[in-house]
Image 1: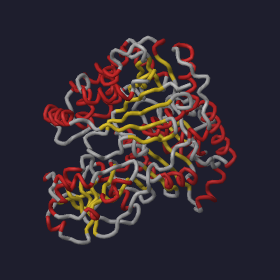
Image 2: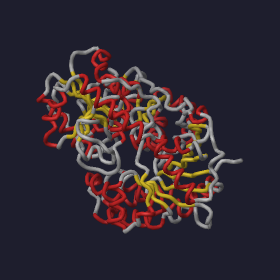
Image 3: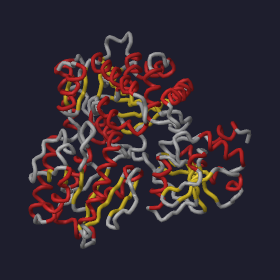
Image 4: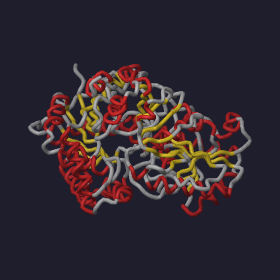
Length: 553
């Protein structure tokens, strides 16, 4: 008997698996693939030949990458002019997908082919709803679902302010999310508060929403009790941990942690993730380590050795999956009620609840707890995670709904544990270059690349950027300059291209005579590989022959 199939459509690539949203997409559908064969379709932006066309994560979960067509890139540029945004940013990219989704025939045609045997098609974000709806047209046998990872309108109102876009863009997001919620057959929510908000904003009926919560896959996590951590760390000092993305609410929390750290000179505060690229690093206390992006091995080490984790966030939407990661690893958490949103925690039972302005007070409260009390909190948190917040728990809620409401046979679809295992060719270790290193791109990827290199003892010579307004400025004492042929003539130089649209500048440097083995791709600033290795660095794929042919080499 053939297994039923689900197609999922996401508006960005899930590679590398370096943040909660990407891990949630991978691990939720991995859990659901116990019953379904699943294809996750990712729009890979405007980077040509950047990703392999398809990749099997498990025997029943496949990732397919579709490159956005040139017309979409033109629309992105038009939106930049409309919103008076100087450089490409998230709002213009996602809204170009929205506006072009009705008639983006090239992508819709591919989605129709991929989903031709699907019983369900899921918009992973509201921005792909028009594409999903177009692919489902004339398919009465295929259900259209929306997996809402947050209330997108509320989230964008809280995070897009830095782009200074006009209010009309928020109106577009509102109308899009309303259309998506009202016209989807089912909405998968992750918190009851999100479901309530959908009802308030869009008058969505309760029976149309299924709260599946969110989860965490602790397969690669080692549980270590607080009483065992100090010996494992090999240090007499307490240490705290905060890991987050670069959303503004997360940056505000990181800056608060850095300020609070002044009250605790005997505690080392580790701040990891892209949040570090946007923090205020002026006069940073000596007991604060801003680590930037970290590898899986580095994160595992921190999760096994730090004495406590912090999550003093007060804004955003959805469920903070980092909380579950902390619970699964045995590290006690000091968090705000909002930081624990969507999780049924109790103060002093499975975490320490704090008000935002009382963070110092509650760090002190935690510091005087006995080892036994800390172990009890960690054990209670782990049991809460295990009983209620694994991804399989989330998947089972979906399966229960399917069995009750859809004519899909699932009982004979049992798979062996080996068929669910992630295939281990994903995320090859980053290449660390030697020599005189320049970073091309002084944006977020470039900043992440700088943090990544400096954490490994590598100091670049300078940034290179085509934006004249940045020339002469510095990022963490590294100057920003224009590109020159003099750099190309430096036989020892290595240039790391750390920006999303890297193909055009790479072609410019190839035309100037830079050798391919002196070019390094910096995906997201942290996944580094030589251009000459691009064809075999799964999941990335750069066609060096095509690039050289386009510049006449």
